[in-house]
Length: 118
Image (cartoon, rainbow, N blue to C red; front, side, top):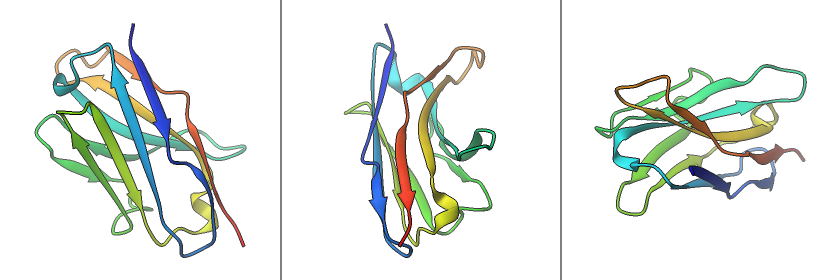
């Protein structure tokens, strides 16, 4: 059974930083592209960042230059370093795994809340 478990969420003031982590088990981590999505209250879930099996990265325009995604295949973890946070970044952040070949094989974590406010 596949488990994706996010951690590191919490409350931070505008301009602050947080680091999210996602630990994966039950899957061949190195064969999965890993992504972060987020969902703000009343809004649809949206893509945030991706790190693929070759360590290539990509970001939503709204977070480019402020967020950095990375993966550690030895520890089956993916991280999201978030800096210069603003209230618009407030959301539940979800870890997402997608098999690099069979892209219909996907998994979601339960999410971790990030709140940015003064």
